[in-house]
Length: 65
Image 1 (cartoon, rainbow, N blue to C red):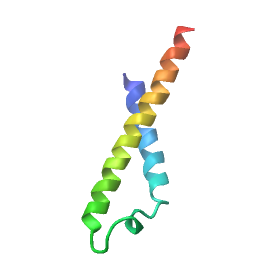
Image 2 (spheres, rainbow, N blue to C red; image 1 turned 60 degrees about the vertical axis):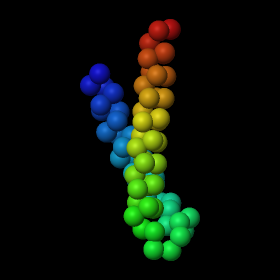
Image 3 (cartoon, rainbow, N blue to C red; image 1 turned 30 degrees about the vertical axis):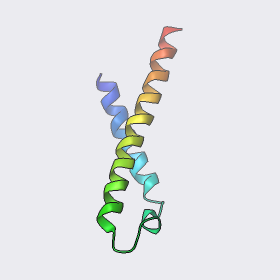
């Protein structure tokens, strides 16, 4: 299980780095900064979870064969 924690750490850095390039504020209304930050936070958490589990599941299925 410690391998999955290491994978979470690496994917977290990559996702935050990649989301930094997107201008989320242009999607939201003017003066809705906190809503944009909360959306960005939940988007990052979702991406971290999905990408980590995808990579980990592929690794686990490769060990079966």
